[in-house]
Image (cartoon, rainbow, N blue to C red; front, side):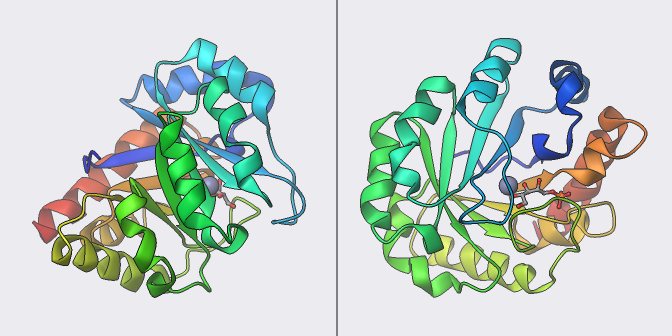
Length: 227
Ligand code: DX5
Ligand code: ZN
């Protein structure tokens, strides 16, 4: 899996009435991956977008579509999201009693498979499936809403995952989601994060394109420090 540094604009924070336009804006700033949040009002206390919206987005962008399933029984929807255009699909450890099987199912569709950890879930809980994960997504807020404050405890988890990856000679990318902005992007990348998801800090400011560029430059300076 590519460990190239990426800023993934989270479409949850976009203006849904102007989705195509907003996607074109962030693409013009070099965005290669978009983050797509699926919420069911059960696993998390909010409802967002589903399969049909992803299908429409697939038609207007060549970006990698990273689908984050915050739903109960995520295995039931893997094939539908893949068919709608998902390039990667992640499921929560907390929602997946048969994580090993579900990651295998995602890979069998041809999508890259990710496992997600809530802030309250330790890294050791996924140690036995790391060889089946193409990426690990760390939540740095409690999932369900955009615009929440970044939880510092996620930095230690990034370091733990980076260490495990080199110790075991694994290849997963490390992704982080929640509260990413210009005040912390550098530190997050320095800790070893490859993919930084950013919602409010990209779409709720004056210019999404400028914000993507600035976040990328900021994260790049952190990555150079860690090299
Ligand atoms: C939260 C979602 C995030 C959200 C991040 O449950 O998984 O992807 O869009 O939004 P910000 O960047 O505003 O915290
Ligand atoms: Zn997300």
